[in-house]
Image (cartoon, rainbow over all chains, first blue to last red; front, side):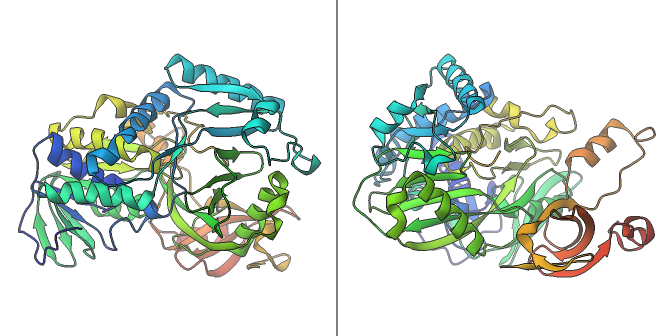
Length: 395
Length: 94
């Protein structure tokens, strides 16, 4: 599927660190839209092996701030025809997305989000409990009696897609246009001369380049240490799990912030489930029994009939969190060093628009207008973005 | 169940504890620049390593300091909160 390159060239126009969805999408759009094909994508592991292959594949744009809504809506639009673009089935499946409200104050937030969304032309509605029951007949609206569902925010364009295929599609598309993908090539240092990027040191030797994009999610702080940049990014694990495959019964995506659950059913019949972040900093992808126990208990509050269903696998990714739940993107104080990070628990759905906007930023040296609210200098200016709709669970 | 050794209560399940973030020393708010203050308020040392951290045993409301490796999740030592005044200035990373 990909060309294997045994040797690194002495230099490239652009070096992208991280062969996940974001890094490969940037490479793809650089080659396709900006005519920059002399690009190397480096990964210390394997393609799509980080958070691209660890998320719960949900795509939506029902955010709270104008910056967030516009940005993700562009991403949802880009998702629609990607499969055709790649000639690869992404199993993109529009399901509708329910964010359940169990309290009056949650209902108020849902109405607020619905109105912000509609203002920007995004299809979201606050709906009542009867609407939820019609769409998900097997749900227990009382949630065992202790967290009754009052209504929900319903976002019709909510979708899921096969996450591995996204990385493969972008990777293949970039590869066919001349981009080199080097797996198992770890960046060990970044050479900066007089405030400008001069190249990267890797486990396979030095590469000269004047432009580096850092798209490494939970490994971002280690790369930033190499160029002496500080950010608010902190890393907590985010866990997820999947059930054995069962008969199709759940069409929409269901999220409950109060119960700390999000769940969808894949085309194979597995339930893909996630909850909130682990409670403290850790740079490890271990799983915990606490997580599986708590998430299962909350799943059973909503869907008691699942009590005999087994959990097949659980895993974790390293989420790079920011204090305002918005990403950090664009140019940095180091000339030629670009960042696409701080994607925490919400990065998968933004893959196409991140690739689009970062390729534009790399090609022109100026931030794309859609990412102006996400720049690294917003903290020094005390101007945080405040996207509390960033992940549907946990805050 | 993972256990954490509290200096007051001994080994307790980690779910009884709340994480309070890395121990950090504030610059003098009257003397520092806006940029230095912004750096203190927002920026963090996000890379893995051995870090001194605030932890609270929620059941007893007892705050203390743990030296923990954030790659392996092993707690190397715990200290009473007074450690910030008595010993932290000697060991804190510059």
